[in-house]
Length: 138
Image (cartoon, rainbow, N blue to C red):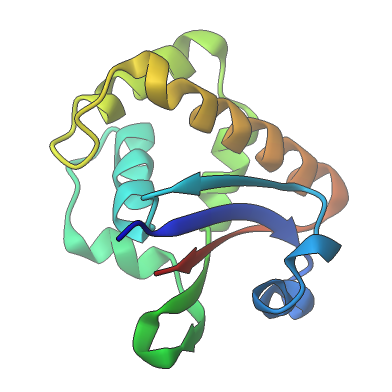
C-alpha cells in the first residue's frame, strides 16, 4: 500500500478544503511515500541539526480523517522561508544528504525533483502570502 502525498500552497483558512476539492488548488505537486517524517528529516538537514521526533511537532496536523487515513499537515513557516531562498549548491547538498537517509535510501537524482518542487512552491507561497501544506492519503 502506498501513501499518496501532495504538497500544496493555500491560505491558512482554506487549507483543509484540499481534502475534498484538490482540483481547486493549482499550486501543488503530487508524490507517493512522503510523510511528515520524511519532510521533517529534510528540515533537520536544512538546519544542520540532528533529526529527532520533536521536529515532527513543527508540522501541525490540521486535518485527520478515518483514524489517520487522510491527513493535512502545515509546513513550518521558517522552513518555507528557507526553502524559498535555497541556493542551487545548498539544494544539491541537502538533497544528497536526504537521499542517503535510511527512510529514503535513494539516489539524489531521484529525489531532486521533489526538492526543486518544494523550492518553487515555497517561493510562490512567500510571494503570495500563503503557506505550504502536506496532504496524505493511505
